[in-house]
Length: 220
Image (cartoon, rainbow, N blue to C red; front, side, top):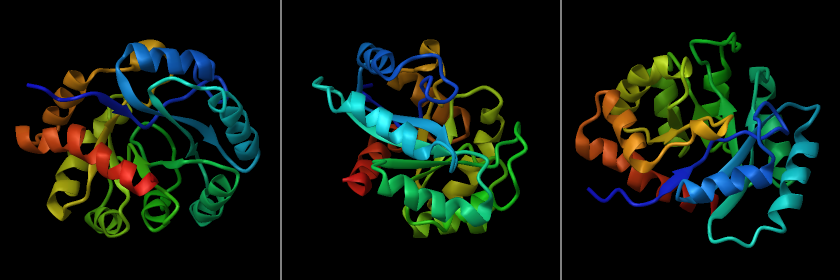
């Protein structure tokens, strides 16, 4: 089965808690046959400008075939501040905004999922754990993608996320939440992760092949 090339929208460098520089991350993306790779370091109000500006310095020198997006993951942000931080990230140059969702393995403040799916500046709600049907519906209405994650621990919520998203018709993506080189996966593994949530083969193919293209339309 030809699943095409890999789109990866959730990665970290040593500008947050990853182990690679931006340049190293890009090289690993190329080696892993990514056609698009987003650098989405953890940010809050203390570092969002620094992170995006430093990402873009490297990206300004990038002349490879792989398309690279400058981005952020809003992390442990008070729900009342999600929209403000997302707007600020856009203002300083982020191409893509991910919001750290209510994963089952971290003490994310309740209400974060709801704040993220209500925010037009958020593109992806990462590992949203026990997301409600109402929140998934809001994500669908606002064109926000829900993440099925390859990351251990966070992935405990994958089956529930897929069930709720499928029920309301919200779009999903498979991302790695990459922190170290071995976290990156190929399209075959992304497809297997989608299947492990209970999706059909056709649904899993849509998640890993078609939905990344739809997100790219949103990002423009």
